[in-house]
Image 1 (cartoon, rainbow, N blue to C red):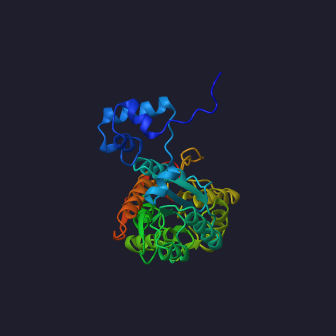
Image 2: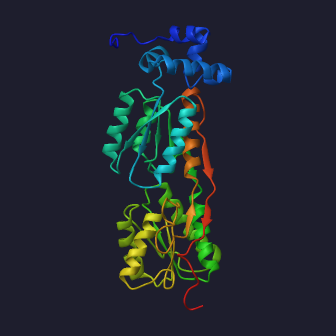
Image 3: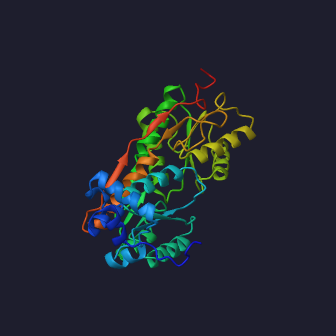
Length: 343
């Protein structure tokens, strides 16, 4: 008969069974300090703890150290496939440093984002990673005023008040327009993202830069979508086509590009025969749509890893200066772009 009242093994029991000092066992069982113990010894201690059924008391450790080893990660839309690779990168890098992520889906509303940030602070997270930042973001301001280490990912703050990891959004859109121009398109339109977001503003600026540089098209042949959604992309495309005679569209993200597919199809326009379309992000599954989407690839996994690394640095070295890491975009050619029909 099993003794249900058996007391769980403590750290000293694990150390004794593994034949090491208590402090060595403690370091080996803490992911943040395991590297300080020789690999074979750490492996033996971890296996001994597993065999005995030992569980590290994270609450007691946080009371002792003043740290929870928890990081709040806030995204605007968890259903958006873009955030999957970013979150994988964050979780992988945090785990390597002995931290865990608390994921929060905050939506687009400032009030909800502020409330959720406050709740995470009440839970004593050691820091925050925000994928929700606007160009002048009051939520970021509240985080910094509270003294909570905060890093931005995918979007940046215009005042550069916090560390951020972003793609070179301006350069990415230049790549898209240059590609379309290389195919012979001279009438190129742009579906811009919301202009209160760094991604929307910088990608629109990149479109204007490229049109001026190449001496083609019309600089104002762009329409701002209300959100980064397929529905908003469809509406914006309808407006763009009503205002401008274009043969190609460079969209500020892949969901907007998929909205452009629908708007063009509704008008009997076949992609790419009648309309070439380029997306931005290379989110999962855009190679599976018909036609597969030509797009700008962003290093989402690396962005997540770098954001986590920067945050851990700021948690452990609070006087660190804000740092901005900018990753290089890459053009991915698929079947949604072709020469204009007149060529």
